[in-house]
Length: 264
Image (tube, rainbow, N blue to C red; front, side, top):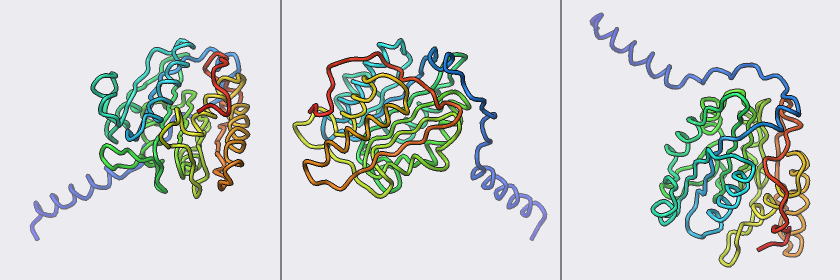
């Protein structure tokens, strides 16, 4: 085998190894003080990953409205509903577009990241129905490392089996992660006639109750349990990761009174 050919083979192998190499860790994150977290403004990516019913886009719009009330104007919206993409100013919710949007957030001083994704779930991650792709925790983590680094970051993932996002590699010190269910449990409420899924209704209720993200998580858990019990459903058990650097992060929205735990 000639030397030029050996060199070509080695170059290809090195390129493949480089492509598979993990991203470097973000800079070490120090605990953010309560005052700094309160003043944080979010850059946001909001994703409705399924377009077969309006419940997912309804939730995205409701979360966007609350972020705007707080002063967040840098909001990227992605949707799997053709009408919302054509007429609503959203980008198509393909995997490439989702990862590109998250990787481009780049918050500056006094800014953080907020990602909300709601869709049907899959044991490997959240489904993007336009293309049949799945947003895996590993892809999401890599996009967040690129786009947010060590900035305060909140990720809410709503769908069946989404507890896979509340563990490694997503559980970094600068992140709050909320999910609609355990990794092995379904969530419910994506049916005709509903305004939001059950978890998204409870998320809005938790946001509007005020306080911190840890308090919102408790309120969401109680709300979901109250919704499941009358139907005899298996408990979905919403999950959370509350990173030590952002343990006291306040909610990004003003209190409202138009959402209740039993809203439809």
